[in-house]
Every structure is written in C-alpha cells, then in structure tokens.
Amino acid sequence: MSKTLIIADYKNNRLKKSTLSAITFAKQAGIFDIAVLGEGVADLTAELIHFGAEKVHVMDDSNLKHYLTHEYSTAVTHLAKTIDATHIIMGDSWLARDMMPQVACRLKAGMANNVIDFEDGRFKRTAYAGSVVETIQITTPVKVIIVSSTAFEAAQPEIRNESPTERVRCSVTKGRVKVIDKKNIQSDRPQLTEAEVVVSGGRGLKTPDNKKILEKFADKLGAAIGWSRAAVDSGWAPTNLQVGQTGKAVAPSLYIAVGISGSVQHLAGMKDSKTIVAINKDEDAPIFANADYGIVGDLSTILPELTKKIPAH
Image 1 (cartoon, rainbow, N blue to C red):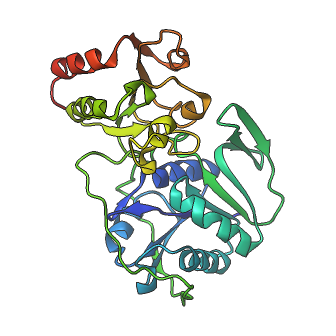
Image 2 (image 1 turned 180 degrees about the horizontal axis):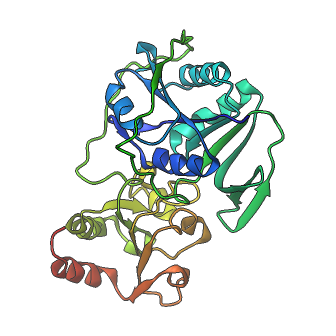
C-alpha cells in the first residue's frame, strides 16, 4: 500500500502557495500525511490539521531553526523511513530544489520535478522550458516528487475536520555548516510567487531610471514586481526577482509584462497566469501571441497614464 508524505514549506510562519498546490496534487492520489519541520512551528501545525491529511507529523527541534540542507534532508529521510513513505512530495520552491535531491539520494529513490499530472502510476512533467510534456515512470520503490506549483490550485482548509498530530523525535545530525547570522529582506510589496498580481519589466525599459515608472504602476495595483533575465543580467534587479526558466515560476490572476519580448525561457515562468497583459512598442513581439490583452506603444508614456487612471488597490 502506498503512503504519501508532503513536506510543508513556509516563510514567516505562513504556508507557501507551493505547499497548498502540493496538497491539491496529493488529494487527487488519495490519502496523505503532512510533515512540518522547524523550531516553534505550533501555529503552522494548527493550520495544517485542516487540510485533510491522515496525520500531521511535527518535527520541532532547535537544530532545525534555520534551513540547512544536511539537517533537513536527514530529518525528512528519517521520517520517511519511520512511516514507510512510498511518495515524498513538495511543491516547487528553492528549498525543494535544494533538499529533495538529497532526500532521494539518501533513500535511493527515483525523482521527478516539474510534475503536472499523474495517471496509472506514471507522471507527466514539463521539459525544455515547457515546450515538451514527458510521461515518465519511476521504477524505484520510493519516489520523490517536486510538483509544479503553477499547475495546481491552492488547496483550501477543511475547517470542520482536524487531522491528528504526532510529534516526531529525531536526533538531527549536525552538518559541517552553521548559520552565523540571518537577515530578512523587508518589503511592503507581496512576495513574487504568492502575489495575485505581478508586474514584470524587461529590457524594453531601456534604462534603469524607468524602474521608477514601473514601481509606481505596480504599487498602485498592489502588485509584486518581477523581471526578465535580460533585466537581471543588466544589473537592474536581484536574481530572486527573476521570472522564467532559470528564475521563478508564477501563476497570478493577472500578469502584466512590460517591455518583455516573450522568449520561450520567460514564458516558462509565467505561462500559467490566469490573465496576461503585454505592453511593448514592437507589435511583432512574441509575447503578444501568449497575451490575453496587448498594448502597442511606448511604455514611458503608457505606464504613467495607466497609473493615473487605475484607482488605488
């Protein structure tokens, strides 16, 4: 009998959308357990019991206060072996990409990422910037899966039902790395991967001075800001705000691409957005083929006009 285990990912004691997408994926397969790791995760436990899991496993340990690959991967491996999990699942995130390969290695398990569906024991995953959908079969007894967070809706809590919790006592082995200091980057804007509205800028802004126009427009909408790889490579923005194949994947209700040509690499990171709006002076830009609405014109003129006309969010 198969046993599915979801590893919860969170930030500032709030579940990430990627975890909620993984829960939706797991619900389609049947019963599942959820595990939460960290220090002081009582609030998260109280939230996780309402998502229909058969059991919520809590690993609350001072050695798990900060994420480190060795400590977290050994803890997850211990839990997976203890409950005889056959499927270990996470929603796509930087933590999943870093930790899950280690977990797969420790469990001698096959692994698949970018999973968008499953049928008859086989998994469908995207490849080559989303231009190909592969159907694969993992032949090992234990399977490690990273679910494409943009392919599934966020699960909703089932307030009436509560899953039992179990505290897992695990001697977390210390690795060779320790956290000396940690500083959180403060921002009034929504997180890029969690936001309902995302405004992204590209090389079409021409100069970093035009960032202010983009920021005013995004702030009026209460939107998160993303950037194309070309803009990031030009030094206009940090890599953690890059959208695309080598950046982050987003699927907001509204995605506005400003001065972005629409390469296949960028599309891989935002193609699952509910509504896509493109603003570009080149009417032949590939982004228009994937947009629901398009505006052809100079963004330095269009964005200020839109900012004036849109009421504050």
